[in-house]
Picture 1 (spheres, helix red, strand yellow):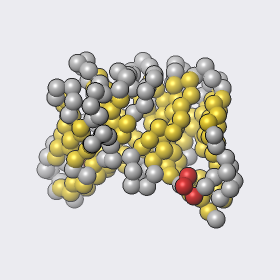
Picture 2: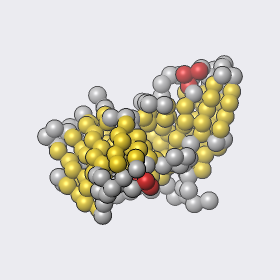
Picture 3: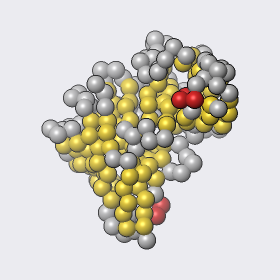
Length: 111
Length: 117
């Protein structure tokens, strides 16, 4: 069935790298996404990756995709307090034209 | 405004009452999604509208839930005979591209927080 899974919490020290992981079940994914939800705000698209890519880098963000293992990760370099948020992994199910989200990983930053 | 607008932002109701939640998408966006966000449950897909096509209702949890989209714009999510487990934040999102993902992105409203006592 349609499923996207990720751990619920991650705590990192300011300045360290954060790595948020996600697994999905769809064999025909075309796009995978990372959305960010800051406290009291709606979700915003942070970055996305096409399924024919292994890696995408955008400033402090690196997305890695392992299609064989159906594993997606988001690395945030030099994590700052402003990175505190919930990060959602999402998958586009082309067979149903809908986007399935994971449970979200709450990233907290400690000094 | 320019973003997705949802109302009410907060709704407290008694068990058994009906509620209506409204979503006003970004003008020109053809796709509209409803999701439910419960504590620790992530985003649960509810329903998807695309243009004049029949909506994908596969995520609606029970027949107490229904949604409509009038004139390809404003959408209303109705929950009949509310139960305590319906308490959640209901999020609406719209997208410019029909399927919402190939070249575009979902634009989310800030949600309607529903509390059923």
